[in-house]
Length: 225
Image (spheres, rainbow, N blue to C red):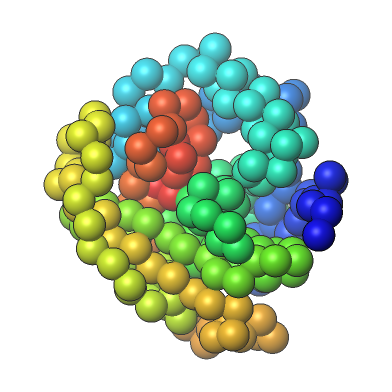
């Protein structure tokens, strides 16, 4: 069977409850730069890439986001509420055939309101709207317990606990990844979980940094973490 030379991408805007996700574009470098700069005290304990944040890194990130979207390797979105960007998230093809990984992080002004969960819920819907996707995963460092609140509330199952390769770790990482998975057959895409509308204090930390993300990406999350 021939492979689709131009596989479909998710919609460039996604909505779930209070959040609107919109695709990051090359012209958004200033927005990314401001957002990360203001969130640095919040991001530094959990991400490696934040320590090297510069205006140039923001430009490299949005440029790479455009390139990876065109290649169908990753789909990066600004998380917005009322027209204001308050974080970043992404769907990433890096867990093998049939799978997409979610990453996300929030500006501290957006935490504690369930917004990360809403953004992740929008990405779950988009992921399972793509042909051939049978599972979605969220990975986070074991020390970042707040990150586990998001997949738990969306019905993901924790399927693995494993040491990460010898790579630079963020200051609060312990080097053990927890892996959460949601199968298409188990996903309820009809309505938000009843807890989504309630403020949740456990969502105060961004998703931890993923190994190969050394730029202001959500968790490559670089979206989770």
